Amino acid sequence: MTGRLYALGTGPGASDLITVRAARIIGKLDVLFAPAGRKGGDSLALSIVREYLSDTTEVRTCHFPMSADNDEKAVVWDETAAALKHEVEQGKQVGFITLGDSMLFSTWVFLLARMGNPEWLEIVPGVTSFAAIASRAQLPLAMEQQSMAVMSCTASHQELTQALRSHDCVVLMKVYGRFAQIKALLQHLELIDHAVLMAEATLPGEQCWRSLDDVPDDQKLPYFSTILVNKQWRR
Amino acid sequence: MTGRLYALGTGPGASDLITVRAARIIGKLDVLFAPAGRKGGDSLALSIVREYLSDTTEVRTCHFPMSADNDEKAVVWDETAAALKHEVEQGKQVGFITLGDSMLFSTWVFLLARMGNPEWLEIVPGVTSFAAIASRAQLPLAMEQQSMAVMSCTASHQELTQALRSHDCVVLMKVYGRFAQIKALLQHLELIDHAVLMAEATLPGEQCWRSLDDVPDDQKLPYFSTILVNKQWRR
Figure 1 (cartoon, each protein chain N blue to C red):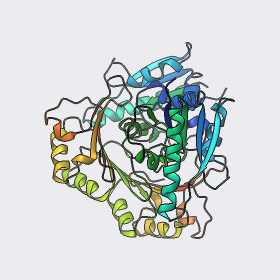
Figure 2 (cartoon, each protein chain N blue to C red):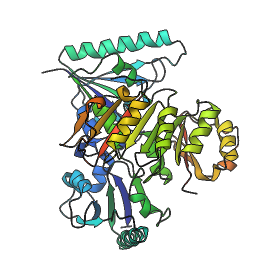
Figure 3 (cartoon, chains in turn purple, red):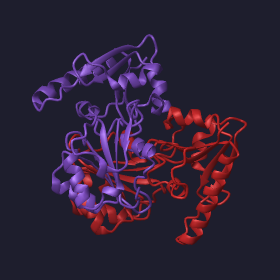
Figure 4 (cartoon, each protein chain N blue to C red):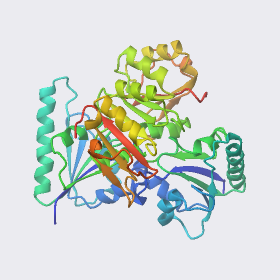
């Protein structure tokens, strides 16, 4: 059998928001690589796909350091890319899972950059977190001639302001630790009534705040927290 | 049994790129509403979900006019929203399908606007076309601190230029009929080597052009054609 590598988006969190294709592929894998947030820690992506796994699939969790040291990260990416390639060369069916979609804000892309575009690679897209947030909050994303920007809240004040001024719909990811500044910016731009804040969408701990004016500046937020702004839709 | 309405994203085109949740819900529906491009015409969304349908599900295709006459459109949206609500009130399990994700560039949002947020409504997200395009073209979307804009090529030259200047990754939807202008803009901004053009991603007629310089200005393109630009990734 010819070895193949599948990069699989697991979707936002609920197990049944994975695609039928990804679920079927996971069921026939020889080896599954799953990223874990901490060394030896649990993998959220793995917990999402566990019900589709065959008993015979070998599972390997891999830890990608969050450190600012790019050299340290590069070593881990090099090693993981080599390990994936090695398994494929043994003729195995190999999977690598990532939360959400494989090609958006995903560690997988660092591995892809080290692999080129080999014939034995298939990438399977997944539902993005912001699509799940829009569905759960019943707040639309862009429609018709409108435009959408997806920003990280780590961007500069100027970049965030420009995105909020230029686009009808703005997804503000990585709100964690920056809520007070983002809230003040939305108030300043008179967009606070067009925003919702959601944490851990589709997971058991899902929380949704629809009135951001009432959320305290020092509100403790989970790591997966996102603000969705739609200028054309007032809550 | 209590009636429920499910707004279901079918994903980009391939039947197995629907979510497991949507496939399961479709299998237990009493009535499925499927939008058709032309009156009496086929519904692409329906062809995607047909294999998950139960024999007992009643299928109704509905046609939403593409006309510029907003009053004519509003009448059809009013009627369809009323029809969906009527079925739910009969205690039925009712589905409404849309291509891609339910909340992004989707007719469904016009129906949502007429319904408010009733308890009997559940929206199920889907894989967006641009996530599928990125996977198929093996061209990443935004990563880490980068940002992404999703634009319609019907936007003004100035808006498109600003988006291409401001964001690392830009999705240019609705290229159909506007390819020559967009190509010239990408050449002017020296972004042509960072772009791919894809039509009908994940469908049998999928086409991908990686060297946009070589695509003739008058190239005939299918309706579902999109350009993906990633400044940080040269093909």
